[in-house]
Image 1 (cartoon, rainbow, N blue to C red):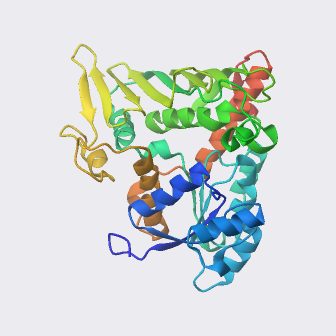
Image 2: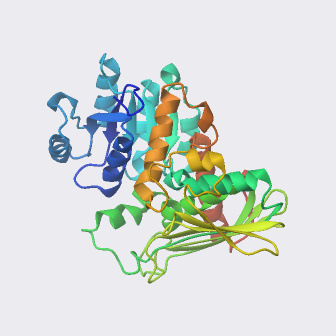
Length: 383
């Protein structure tokens, strides 16, 4: 049983076998709050790896599948079949499984980006899920308590009219050419598996989603400069983008995987005509809030000056005990569990949806188009 006494949701997984990083993360996140039991999986496209991975996770032999198609059919037919599935495959393998499980009436939890191209994302949105099956996109950084608080501060008017939004996500792990033995790099730098965007699709979409989630500003157009600095690399490894928002606010986004010395530098800064906020994912339990003409205030996760909703929403341990990446993922999982059970009204607007996934693909597509046209301003309604 889940910690709140509710019955655990029967979970399956597509991808994530053979030591895959993101599969490991999703499995931990699903367990933290006791809302799910992983009971089935199609963990690899290679049958021998799928079998070995399933056994290593303790799955029953008849719940280890060698294809997601077989898994969707079989689990939908079982009285004790899975109720939700996590899709943790490379980008090009998001659409097929998501379609199959939604049409089978099984809730879908999909890693971002939603698909490898905008056309497939829009096709996915046209599917009529069986039995009201729901969809969650794991833009996990939206699960951090202080990001939720930042969103509330903006919505409350505490920052005033938003003028400037700066988002960045900088890493250095692709500074040199990646060998074929680096599985994480291999598919992310391969257009056939990653899609049209490299760095922009992998981490740029996180920075963009965070800016949109916190500010609520709707993007009108982008001017982008996408670069592949590493010789021979087919997809971008560094991105500079200017953004125009409805209402006149301006934005800048930088994403890089060749910024030497940067580990996981996701940062967000938002400035209005009354106040500004600054947050960094590498130190996520702290956020600076500064009203014009007043001293800076350091807001802490669950601290005494936290606004009530952010302070109480999935803050699991007392202040001063760090929470981070895994707990943010777990927040999405536990709140989606509430949605599945019909108890998630409080989380409306907080959980990333298919619409967010489509907008993310619009962002990628418009940016690629802009960069190919000498950074010409490109409107979202042009893609």
